[in-house]
Length: 456
Image (cartoon, rainbow, N blue to C red; front, side, top):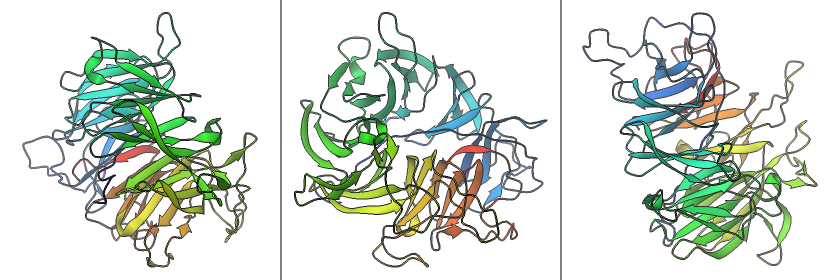
């Protein structure tokens, strides 16, 4: 671990859609078992949010060690299950269904729904306390008497019941620190951060508003929880300048800041456009992705990439120890980036929504969607040069990214379908069980939303 910023983390979320499938005749299910469920030790959960014919929406289970769908009915989790969040101890999976704003609690051991609450509106951000006892949901449209809409709901995961709430107007995203003693809430079109003290909810002053930000959307925390590294989205979210801003949590004062852009002669000035809507921290290195905007429109040329896309996004690398940009100007897809995960062999998967879609008209034409893969290594991986980006020929928005532990593959939900990527080639994996369909799982078809692995 590097000094100063070891053990950083962040919380985050999302959504999507799904359709028909039939139960396979083979898989990981042991029909002789007397206990419920698949008896698999390395599972992946997929949320599907469309019912079609005799097929219902639900959470489907896959043997993630062998890329085989389990022969078991999906877990019921509302009418349109989408975004999923694992508890830190991995004993439960939270599933949000936009239809009816239902939040279902799945007990992973029994592969069954064991509780449900109805939120007062849509959420796209859920965080869970480190002891896995309590969940917090940002509901930006929840009505509040006498003030603007927006609350953070508190949910007991032991009883699947609401235990409190705190008013935060237009609260959209949440980040929780390592101890669970502080939650940062980020609101739409705001240049402030709401610092929530969970222990004070319902008994005292639970929220402190801190200004001086530029459309903040997320935060990461030092291992001792004294510093939050806040990601300012800037122009892409209607503000001015994307940056990383330190927030001292001991007294809620601002610390150092670094613009997320190509550095100029003065390290605190920008020589190029800036962007940042999602980030991932590995050690003291932060990877930031976003689409630069100017005058309310995407403004980043795609040079040196050869593509029909009129604009592109940028990947920037920041060293949090020194608060400096160490690499900038790496071209990725455009769109609003909201998914990022680091797979085996140092391959960084970056997903977006509302990107430029390019569909082939003739054989050999360019195909482009919302997925970018960046090689973080200083050595070539497969055919991918060090510190280079590849954009797989696949259309659609990316709504789920899940590296599979102990394997060199990453599950990606794009355009409602699963793609299994081999991180040694950054291309779809050859599945010996379905050799005619690279990167797919036999009989796992339909429109999917999110993917999580409860056993890794």
